[in-house]
Length: 482
Ligand SMILES: CCCCCCCC/C=C\CCCCCCCC(=O)N[C@@H](CCCCN)C(=O)O
Ligand SMILES: [Zn+2]
Ligand SMILES: [Zn+2]
Image (cartoon, rainbow, N blue to C red; front, side, top):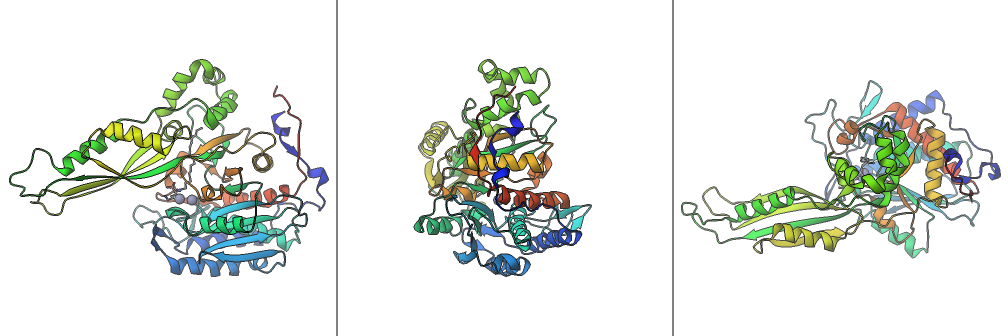
């Protein structure tokens, strides 16, 4: 019953559907295109240090690899903020509200150390393409353009208009890419039915005892604070040290933050909905526990904290990421500073977290400077009427028939999609790729890789998704699960 829930409409689609089958030649061309993209080192080091040469080269590269996308009369291409790209694909039916697909061009740095192959080589080994950006997020970027190119070659004409936005500075803020594209579309009066970005996967092996993978579509995203803590003390000769130095005071303060977890907020929201949907996938007795969260909520919330990937789902986290102090080995340090990166649970706000942090530090000598901060993102709808969510669900069910459950979640990282709040209430973060805990660690880590098969499936997914977007979607009466 659950498989037929949601939206329906293939029967009313006007154009014949183009099957997502690709020739051997096309399959080779698509993986080679991804390798070429990985070889361009579009690294963002900091908001002011981007590899602009590589970003410009990337613009040339996509023009070369996807000629049809760039030479189709109903597609408009614009460069925004010097290196980001916006494509407007005009559909034949102006009554259908447009949507937008997002991906980003930039990647985080990847020093060679620890990699089996150089991170910008794009080498293929044992059926995997290696390199920085193979999961985050050149896979999405290339798959979107690749799927569109393949559709166009087969004379595809969309009914529903859509946009493709490729940001160039997601890893350092999105201020010059996504934010500018968003402002441009707002100035044009565009309102979107929904956007789809990176930020979640088909999760495989993340929950103990859950043998089967499930698709998590993130309907919200944690907020964040970058907080600088600073302690100033009078400098002097190290031969006669004061009782406490700026280093000692600050170290004790950050240690208290590390040792005092923020409150466990498990209770409502997407995570609870996901666990309830997953309940029957678990063996006894976990199925009973998850079917009775009214009773077992305290137990489940404690179990969730035990694991380093599920812990961030239930609370605001505080990571000590930078620490600087001292100017010479025999000088009492005049100043010590540290950066704490908080990720805010959807049930809290920036102000609440700052108040909690002040109470934990509890030392007036430690100054608080908020570098940047934003609240958690609103929860996008995932009900039967939510077009973006239901199109994702429908496409997941057809491309991954072995996946039984599609559940809402919260993205623990941040994505460019947060810059599009002004254009839509439907923001969905999902990559149609299987992810195991080990591949999760490779994102921003070492040996990031994607299998050739997984990449082909991602292209197929987008190929199907775009066509599903053209169907007349009518809400289906709610069917009770048996
Ligand atoms: C039912 C519970 C199962 C929990 C399993 C959670 C597994 C996590 C799965 C996917 C998370 C992937 C997150 C990828 C998106 C992160 C993108 C990113 O790195 N963004 C940066 C943006 C930086 C912007 C500048 N401040 C970031 O968040 O740092
Ligand atoms: Zn990313
Ligand atoms: Zn990233």
